[in-house]
Every structure is written in structure tokens, then in C-alpha cells.
Image 1 (cartoon, rainbow, N blue to C red):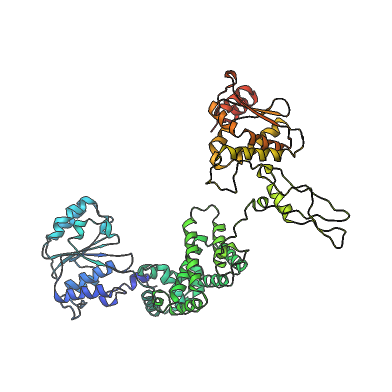
Image 2 (cartoon, helix red, strand yellow):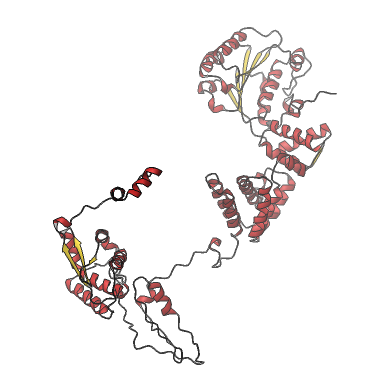
Amino acid sequence: MEEYIVSARKYRPMSFDSVVGQLALTTTLKNAVKSGKLAHAYLFCGPRGVGKTTCARIFAKAINCEHPNEDGEACNECESCKAFNESRSYNIFELDAASNNSVENIKALMEQTRIPPQVGKYKVFIIDEVHMLSTAAFNAFLKTLEEPPSHVIFILATTEKHKILPTILSRCQIYDFERMTVSNTINHLKHVADKEGITYEEQALAVIAEKADGGMRDALSIFDQAASFCQGNITYQKVIEDLNVLDEDNYFKIIDLALENKVSDIMVTLNGILAKGFDGGNLIGGLANHVRSVMMAKDAQTLPLLECSEEQKAKYQQQAQKASAPFLYKALKIMNDCDIHYRTSSNKRLLVELTLIEVAQITQPADQDVPGAGRTPNRLKSLFKHILTPQPKPVQQGAGAETKPLATHASAPHHAEAETAQPVAASTSSQPTTTTSPHLNTNIKLGSIGMTFSNILNGPKKKEYATQDQLTEQEAELDQNSEGGDNQEFTDEELQLQWMMMISRMPRAMIAMSSRMKNMIPKITEFPNVEVVIDNQILLEEIAKIKSRIRATLAATLHNKDIQFNVRLAKEDEVTKILTKKEIFEELRKKNPAIEKLCVQFGLTMA
């Protein structure tokens, strides 16, 4: 049985003309051989599998060829070429710097440079992965690299040029190798398939070329794997199955469904893709590349930027005619945001689903039910729109008619607005008529709904208390509004609840006073008299200025017109320290043994 050799070795180029995708570099090297103008050190750098070491070997053979061709190629007939082809040349040395990166290895190499070549003109030293040399080895190599013997030429190869010392770079001629294009890779794979007698589909070779990501060696390795799986007949379906690559048709299908706003079909397609084991992040990344390719296919100038087969280009152009440029731009932006947040998302599938839903809604008409379609949301109506300009409530005339009193409780402004806006439906009368009830008070004041501190009509820029006359007038209006209330009883809990609600409605201009008032606890002395003890003379004077307004608010919200509100300065024995949350917790632990036991058993502490 004939020994099997992988394609990457079997079809390794043996001449400059057989090197794929590096025409500019091979032409330069051939011209150097023809003219005899050879540098003492070369640096070949570029991605993996693009031909750096291969070109170094071809160049070394051509340098020592005794009868080179007119175009600079080696003759392959002289003793030097035969010795190289048979791997017995003593003039060409290869050193793997990854495993020989010490100072001793470099010193041993320098010793060999002193011996002149036995056959040929030059001794060529090829150092692969030169960036792996240690700093000490680089420094030991510097002097010899700068002024080597006349019969010595160094060819260095690396995939990471940035790791090489600048002093090394300045002593070499640098050649940057390019990544393999998809078209060049496909053409070379066709050549190998024809040599091996393997049938193929061009779309399958395109998948292999894209999977190789610019490396010819990787492409040949994947080609061997696919040929083994397909048993000599490389088809598109078998290649994507073998390489676990998502079918490109899924991307075309998702975009077509998004253009038709078929979200449910997209969700079914997504579920099928995820069920096959594909990652949602890879799906979004592949879909973004697909949309980018569709965008490039919209213009004939950008069409050559697509690295794919001609058949794929035709499919991209067909979809580009259906997709508008704004749709493609927005879809790319949405998917790029998803890619940024995918790694940090705790629910990755939901993020992918939301992304695809947003893409599907880009072209949806801007109706009120779809805020994702680019529509600016409607602004909420003003909360006090109907309260400030109340309308008379229509009442039903006839049997079964009922008249509901207007809600004036501070905690129900929304209900008041809703009831004012909706007329009462007729129940028994066939021709109902509506009139204004004489009992409804249309001159509603803000004090009757508890908003006694918010100057809504004048705005926040106006002064709260301009003059004493205005203050007296406001207090008189509040007192007048509270006179119409009843004499309902209330408890300390209800009093303290309405007190806190009143404080929460105070305007921003009085935020400092409202913060201090939260620490005050109103109490009932002799019903319905209410008293608040204040431990600060300055604060007492400030509260005294709005004392009448506080009384009117409490009278309206507690529904008791006889409330009397008093404030006084605290006595020495009544002044207590305001405790922090932690201090309150410690007091509870001392007074309640159950809390102490709970803290000990569970190791609870106050954060």
C-alpha cells in the first residue's frame, strides 16, 4: 500500500511560480536571484500557513543553484539542487527557534557560520519562529546578524513580528506575506482535487476556504478531512455536516422573513438552529456578516469586496434588491449591540430572540402597538389636566338615577379625573337628558385634594410666599374649603399616615423643610386637637408660617373641620436623639430576646 502523505506536504510548492497568492514577493525574490543583489538577512512575516517557510526554502535553493533559469528559478538538475531536493544538503540549515531559543543554541549556530560551503556559493540559515528566541539569545545574535561572513545568508520567519527586537528588525529586509483570499484558496483546492481525482461542488470548496480563514495549510488540512468524510465526492451538505457549519441558507431565510415581518417564523427557525447545537452568539455573528455581504452586494463598486464564489455573489445580489439600505444599516447596528452584550447576558437565548424580533420590526409600519418600529411614544397626559379646569358631571334624570359625590380625597386624584370624564349611562330612560347638579361645587381648590404645597399653576420659578397679604389670602381660601367637611373621627395612625402623605406632596422648593418634618410625629392631645413637638426654635418659626395651611390640609384629608393644629417647642426631657437604623436594630435586640436569638442562630448582622 502506498504511503499516504497529507495534501499540505504532498503539494507543497517547489518553485516560485507554484506559490499561491504571493506574486509580488516571489517576483522580488526572483529578481534578486537574477541580479545577484542579495541581502545578508531577510525577515519573512505574516499569518500562519501562507508560505513563509516554503518561500524561504525555495529562495535558499535558488541562491545556491549553479545554473539558475533566466526568470530566477532553480534548475533542479545541478548537484546543489539535487542535494536539497533529497534533503541531504550541507549548505542549507533549518533551526526551530521555538525549541532552540537559548544563548547556547545561538552560539552553536554562530560557530557553524565560520565554515565556508563545500558545494555552492552560500550557507543559508533558516530560523523559523524567530520571535521565540529569548532576549539574551537575540542580543547574542545581533553582531553576527549585522556583519555575517560573506558566504552566509540568514532567512528569519515569524508570525508575530511585533515580538522581535527593533535592533533585529533594522538589520533585515522585511517581507510581509498576505493572507490567502477565498478565490485563490478555491482555485488551489480545485487543482489539488483534480490531481487526486476527487469530485467536488464549488460551494463546498468555498465553505472550506472560508473556514481556513486565510491559511492555505489550514485549507488543505480541512480539504483532506472533508475528502475522507465524503469518500471522494465533496458536496456542500456533507461539508457543512462534517465541519458543523451553519447552512448559509438559514441566513437568507431569516432576512427574507424579517423583511416580511414574520416574527413567529423566525422564532421557529431559531429554535431549529439552536436544537442542532449551534451557539446563539455564532448565529448573530454569522448573520451580521451575511447582512454586511448583502449591503456590499447592493453596489457594483463594493461587490468585489465579497470573498465568496460567483454563485454566492449572485444570491447576495438577489437579496440586496429586496432589502433597503436603511434596513441593512439598522439590522447591523442591532446585531452589533447584541454581540457586545452577549457574553455578559444571563439569558443568552432571550437576548438573541429579542435581537431577531427587533430586526423583524424594522420595516413594520409605525403604528401605536409597535414602539420598536421607530415611533416616538405618546407623551402621558398631565395628571391635573381635568382637576385644574373641572367640568360639571352629567347626571341621569329619571328612575334609577344616582348622583355620586365628587371625590376630594387627596389619595384619589386619578379616580376624580376618570369620573369627571365619563358620563353616567342611561339605565331605564329612552331619551335621557343631562343637567348640572346644583350641589356640585365647580370651584375646586387645590387644598381640597391635599395638594396644599404645590403651586402648579404658577410654576416652580415663582416665589412661594411673595407677601404677607398673599399668604393671608391663601390661608383664608384653605380655611373656607375645609369648612364644608364633616366631623369624622380619626386615630393617631390615620393622622400620621396623612401627615406623611402631605409631606411627600410638598414642592421641591420646600424639600429641606419636608425632610425635617418626616422626623416629627403628630399626636392627638384632646380630640380633635393635634399637636407637634419641635426641638428647634428656627424650625418652629418656619412651621408656624404655614401652620394654617397644614391645618386646612389635615382637615380636608381626615374629613374633620374641627381639627386644631398646634406646634410647640420641646422641653429638655422631651428632646431625644435621632437614632440610625443600626442603633434602632440594636435597641430591638436588647428589648426582644427572640430577635437576639434569631440573630445568633443565623449569624445576622445589620448591613
